[in-house]
Length: 414
Image (cartoon, rainbow, N blue to C red; front, top):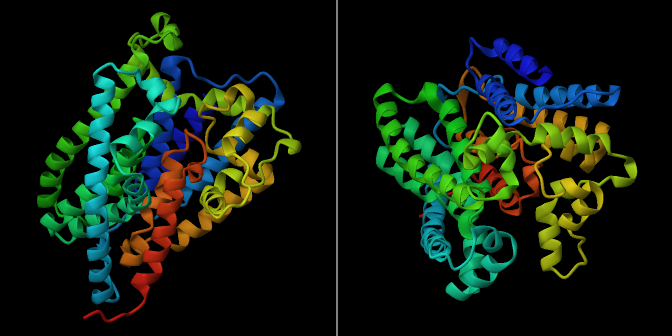
């Protein structure tokens, strides 16, 4: 109840501006409501239970308030058109070839599971996917697709840029190329990449909505409905295969939501409420991760270079035990990553960075606009863990950083 009241009341602060912060708070509220439907609610029995709930609310409100001015009415043209064209051409060709590889892998994955050769859980979690994918496709092409797909985050920002400029054909092309993001996650039939892409798109649309002409909005609504209908169908299909007959959600038979697949979806968005409080209650400084979940890209590079890098998965099992494979929420993960004080510093740093990149009076430069996809991912996936632990997302952040500086420079390309 504390979560629900805090988020819904604080949303009134932004009701007139209808900025991204307003919609974020209502998304937080939806997560709490989903928890109510499936029995995921925080139990406050001791002082530390109350402290953890209030601490979580405090940090989520800091992150959310970072977006209080995120409502765009105008995007300025790039500082250097030649640099912009070069970047667009480069991203187009890289993502085009990556899209072909990703489509083929996803087609083979769905076909493999649909033929009942294997159940989806063993395919996803027991190593079947990694082995089979490298039998279907040359390993170098798989690696290329994994490295290229995070550019889809940039492609999505260019989709909205051209949408605002009413260049629908180019906008549609970059939307299709941005599908590399969910497709790369579907290699192993994981739902996380689908959720990331859908939420990123929805909030990108809400962010740019005031700058999009009413004529364009009607067309994009129809197009987006078709695309997201297909994506969400894949999400429900995977969920249904995994949980419809599973005994894992047998409690659904006695709850408000009887359908196990639907029950699992509500649990997906709300299990952090219970798990987060539990793991925070068990936290101590000897369990500190020293930023492990936030430096996945550095660890991956170090591992490729031959350095001895400890496993993040093993660390989670050593410190979180039964909650190692569950969603514990962004705040609880940051506490284990940096401690309570460090989690506050992290959120304040995020606040400062997001505020520096925010629109000024509704107007923004393109090189700042492209950061939104990366910035919004952490708060919209607050119900999972720290999404920086996802190597591909961290790679997307790195690519965005490079594009940010490239678009600020003035080059001439013949």
